[in-house]
Length: 245
Length: 245
Picture 1: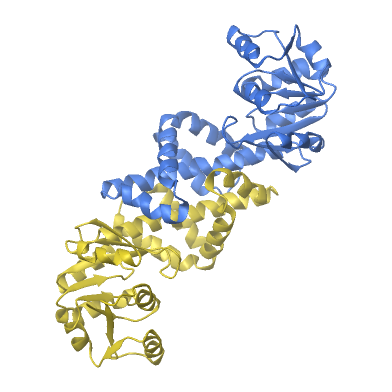
Picture 2 (picture 1 turned 180 degrees about the vertical axis):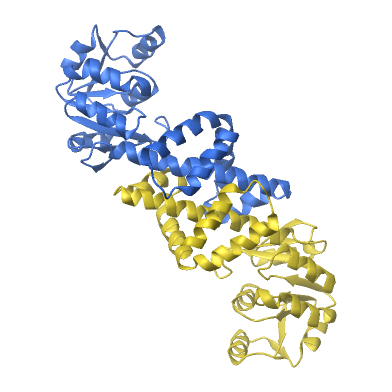
């Protein structure tokens, strides 16, 4: 079986390492690649075709793992060459996944939860053909959610809605605790119910949120626009605060 | 050493079971006790004096574990008989702890975090005499925060600020996930980073919050009034929502 990558960054490289089987060959193309990407492709030691049309025609599965803004473009340009499953792993909104569904056949909507190069990456899939990718469970955690294109992307947004808002709640309550000279004790008392790693995890969330508050605000704004739900009052305040950090 | 209880409910009973030592005797009084309380005192099998004045005069440590509304009254009525440490374990605001500090000598401010009858109750203490209670570490987790009366009470409020707001955030994001038929998967994806018990813990928080939303709203309102902090925007929205549940 041939698996072709469009885009070859950390996600593709890591998958090519995780998925090791005599029955599976990874392929890609050198078309329009930067030098850095070619270095990574060579490091992964996979077969390289001159054009994406050649690579994709030879593929049973095509994996699109590009930057979000390129996701629709590569589907439009190369999707037509894909005869097998087209797995989109890009960090895009469910609406964008819908657009891609109009451009390629046999789309599977995929969302990686957690960092791909963590100990325990999980791949959530949705779409009518998602079950055909369950064999990947031999190499990483794979869960099929539903046969609806968009569900995997929606799930990722739901998770992100919670974690981004939680980070803002952490920032405002920890700020108060520090004003009262009880910052350490605040984490201590919460660890009792939230787990031993609560302090470390929370401090990392707080620092990541403050470091990239602008980007996170933009992402959360897009999420709120997408869901367009009246019930998300706390999330809306989280967005307001993210904009002010 | 004699430890005297004012109030004898679940907290006092559980402490009398947890703290078992040849050197420690528990005592209390039958003064103004209900039949139910006397049953519990008899079950605990501890020495009973006719009056609190007699019991407290014989005590090295007095533990006040009554209902919050009684905390100041018992300190006013009986505090004068206490020659040793007066440990207040009541679920009261730091301001109320301050009032009690004016009524009794040698006050230690105590806050039990988690349920007293759980596997792992932790007792946070503050006040100049708090260190004298560190021997209780032989029987349960005891942490001295500072020498400031009020810090233990404040810490409990800080913890509660976070957990109550978190529960409301859970309710609003889980509501959305369920509307999208992704309720189970929402918990699944969060478990990856929030811990294996995230679903169970969250569902229990959601149900407890909805069941006692009125009481929790009142508690959170008092907390917000006490802290009087401009930065708690998400907490304020959590309070608004608690009032509407």
